Length: 236
Ligand code: NAP
Image (cartoon, rainbow, N blue to C red):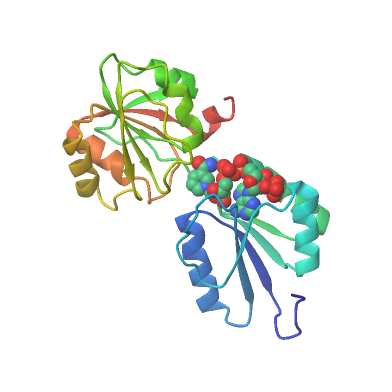
């Protein structure tokens, strides 16, 4: 849809995070005259409703995004994607330059280690796998695309939490699958950790609030967290 005269601003939010959803809500309320569009990659089958317009699916690389910005009359591009979504953030920088559209980067900062945190900081997913002690019970809080690497740990019981059911059955030899979003509070996450007798958590240091409850729960229970940072993930 071309930009109308009344629509002085068209803001494209690269989303897929709770922060991006909050931002869309704020902008829709603050700028009723503007067109606010959130872009999702389409990884989640039933994304939570968002304020403003939503478009779903890849743009087709840097050129595709640049073309979209121009054709849609985007006046401001905001990158509010997940810190581990590296490709789209890199594409946004170049596409914004090609299209001559200002880019605001609002990707969140990784969590800082707090007193009481028992973190085993690792550089790669392979190192995370190798850091699991024998016969541990692990909450594997990683995207489904990273789970295959842990198949070789047939001595470990994994608890895997996913928003959508996996397309193929998980190949982990000993696992429990929990479908749903992370709990909102450390207390809710602690109940899950206790119910499954979890001894270790494996996750990425993705920052933000929505996945932080498990870190607080682990701190409270004194559980070790094997954690990857976005900088380290780049080398995987
Ligand atoms: P990625 O590796 O950086 O991007 C891969 C490709 O997916 C991009 O080149 C782009 O395709 C498309 N894409 C990614 N984000 C998009 C968006 N918001 N709108 C339209 N197309 C998008 O991304 P990813 O790590 O797969 O993450 C995909 C989405 O999930 C992001 O929106 C991110 O915020 C969200 N998310 C990611 C993680 C994570 O751990 N990576 C966690 C939670 C949420 P084209 O090149 O065709 O444009």
